Length: 287
Image 1 (cartoon, rainbow, N blue to C red):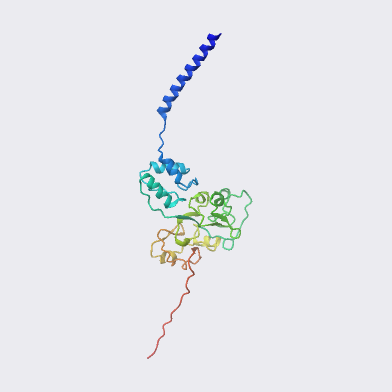
Image 2: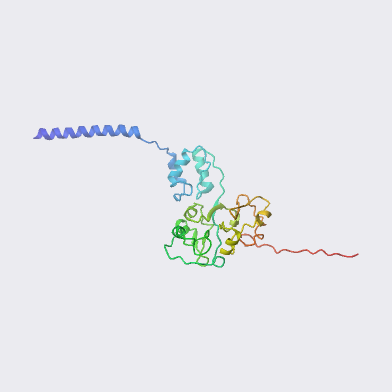
């Protein structure tokens, strides 16, 4: 009996040794080398895992930075230029200067301008109501007001205004991660260049209908009259699909386009008050 037990122990020991040798060689064959600099880069990233960089998380973004030949097209919107500069020093690369961005709502259809014509009684989510009908007003392009963007924002940078029924973006908290942009089924939130003192000039409308129907649906809708386009000296305004658009990268904040808009669809925010116009009357003196 003792010889049987001893034989069993020897067999099991040999099997374990053989399995260990096989696993060792397999591990050596298929082992994946990971650059230690990935951990260094990950440590300096904000660890928000917001996806604003275009990757699933900060770890994936760190791997992309290490593997990339240049930083062109790579940016951490939360960390900004300081974090990208630190990453560039670690990797011995050059970080391009990236302008900070901020989310902007391209709709100003408050109840006073865009009256309610129907009532939605369903799931309180923009993506679902958008799939079912045009909305509670006659504008099929405006904000649905259910707050999908608020839910998507993990930085508490957006809240719903109960009076206007529109989301309000807090510039100081917005990190331009783009989560609200992806969450909006109407595509009326965009990331624009962040200027000094949070100044903005943009067309707060996304209605692509022609002038008449657009104006009937909302009093502050863009009617593509081209008046703003004609006064812009910097080629910052274009008219496409019955809608004016101001390029934030070309706009110089001259503000000439704002008073030209007959529907007040162009907003100017955080600017000092305009000086009243002084009309000069020429006096003809008969000598």
